[in-house]
Image: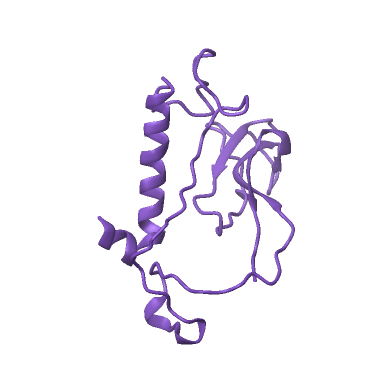
Length: 157
């Protein structure tokens, strides 16, 4: 399992994060199948008054030998490495939408679109996704900012 994490962290971290979320929900008596569309029982545990829907893990790997920045090569791409350094600047913390809720401005159909990675982007549908779409105009969707799920992102140098 550790070998998979070291050689494919981009694919394995989401699996570990889902497992951690399932474990958290089990420990707090939430159903593992609960999501935003099906709220948990009001008596279920929450963190800070909000329902926990994602968990982000940090990997501590003391057994890894540090790789100097100048020695990082293409063979290190998509692999877990450890490198020494000092943070010299940090951007302001920004919000990034991970789950978009949008409505068609013509027929008021509500659609949801999930962004799978914090580094990914998405495009809004060009046509209405309603089951029996009326004659909706092209690019009909408007984002409902108050109903989207956000994460905080920050870049370090």
